[in-house]
Length: 244
Image (cartoon, rainbow, N blue to C red; front, side, top):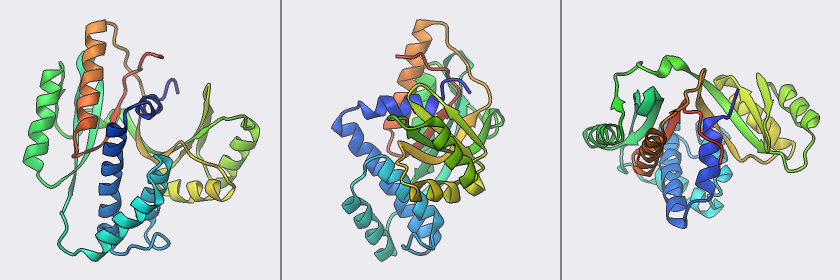
């Protein structure tokens, strides 16, 4: 698998401003709150979705105090905001496939915002299913190399139940079936591995390149606009992003 696009995004996000980091904290906070509500309990030991969200929060350097405060608030408030999970699909410039996962309390606002972004930056919002067939849902755990042995990390990952393992220049990528993700992540965590990223993702089966500089700039602006929207939780795409 060449140039996993999500990791390119993560590396770029790490260099963003404090304001952008605060926005990431807010989005993860929304996921944590929804996990508590949907699971019906604030105990990660019996709420696997909450446990996965906590791991994602920690991988994004959300402070433990923030995590505990969000969980406590969600557990104690019966009439807090009610968020609806909606997935949008569309095409960016040069036909790049884009999937947008949202948690929104106003689906009309979110749909209008997303349609505006796609139109403004040379793409178009499509119908459900128009691009999702080009992606597969997989658990993806990213571990930074940091002098670790590839053989040892791979052996630990496969023993834990991973379905695939890839080594890139500066990272290891561990892939799992979605149903196995929590168990594999917990097994690796128990062995002392720290994650740069750990979540269930939509992984593209093929990638698209953008030849024109103008369209590359538009695609980047589309991604930035989507990621900056408070209702958008995740953006998946199959753009083979240029290496910086």
